[in-house]
Image (cartoon, rainbow, N blue to C red; front, side, top):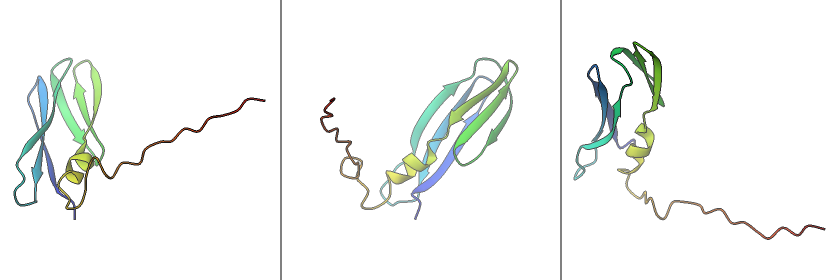
Length: 93
């Protein structure tokens, strides 16, 4: 089960991204604040990115929705569920 919903709100000058959790005991978190380089004209989003069309061009931001949802899933630990990279000595002959 996914841990929540991602919600974004935008004005002409900035966009705010919030995570709305479905897990009991979790609270709403602001994920990020993105200031636009020029006034906003339109927004388009998909599962991974949010594209902002501004007067000076297109700006693309990562939605970070999956990462925020993983924080609320039972049994997921950001410290224990990470696989470390082990580098072995390489001998040059």
